[in-house]
Length: 207
Length: 207
DNA sequence: AAAAAATATTGAACGTGTTCATTTTTTGAG
DNA sequence: CTCAAAAAATGAACACGTTCAATATTTTTT
Image (cartoon, rainbow over all chains, first blue to last red):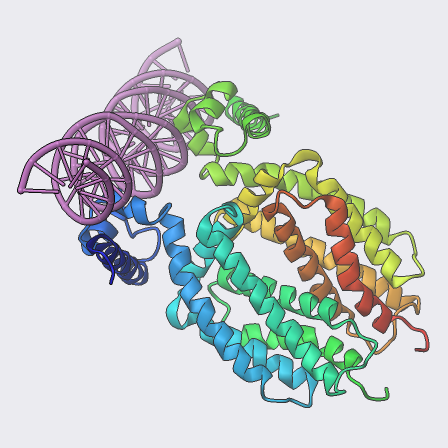
């Protein structure tokens, strides 16, 4: 059984995370003041800092939850045994992008990415980077699965290819959140266009 | 002839930029206080803000100068009429990376990239994004030049391919500045490995 | 059960980026 | 040359993230 101290700790952790998520959504990251988050969670400002290293760390915690969901969805796609490289890629990447704005606004993504670059040593930044790595791994896994089933030529370096494709996906997502005018469909179309020549070249057919 | 007002303005602008660059290099971005920059430039804090929107904008100004230099160097590479896709790419990208740490530290790059994502509407962020676009364009130009000389297969979409390659270059650079343990050689090697399969596939030879 | 040790909470104080009402300087018209 | 209007400079005041010495609570020891 959990001691009183551990119990309270878990409860406060949950309340702070909840309050922060709510406020980030309602008023945005910048406008959500630590004082407000603390008050909504029923703790003092000092206590907030006992639970999270700083404000950015708090945001990264909420973002991480989102990425975990996307990862889970991605696993479902890979299991589908596609027989076309372009279509398989489009579906996996499409899932990433489609989920992206359900919980987080562009502003929140911008702030999160901005923080993960600006303060890479922070705990949740490291966690975010680790999640990013798993997404990249998922793309590589898809390539490997397609190659194993003979859809992709045997002489292609799937790891290199997967990293390349994923880094482009990631960079395009950054461009997307930087530009308020761009919508998800536009993003999907652009990336599909970029992937097309690669999909064609690696496919195991005469040309 | 410039009026007294415009003359003073240009002079102050130069002094502020100079002071900021010096301090960013000497003590890093975070530790360089606006008050110190203003004092070194011989103006008040308020005046600093008449010339630059905020501290980040100031950094972006110094970073932009650096990127301009890299762009110029890149143009020299394209003019060299390479006859191998992998080698040409390696040289162009190698130039980007090799120049990267001559004027700016990893910390400064992190901060700059962090800002360009976090505050995309700021004037110098826009300028930075524009410069990034020109770098991407340069890679596309290289591909187009190679294709025009028959080094690259005619059925390859060079624009799509160039964007893909450049976005990977960019993303890998972000990874590089996030990780203090990674050196330029390691970065070059990784990117070369990622580019290899693409270079092979697009090359105009039987395989 | 009392005392001591370990752990957690608190909020006032601090540092620094940013703003803005006031003052100073420059300009150009009369 | 004078003066009113425009432009620029100023620095004190403000906002907000963060720290930390003091206080309170929980656990462990005797």
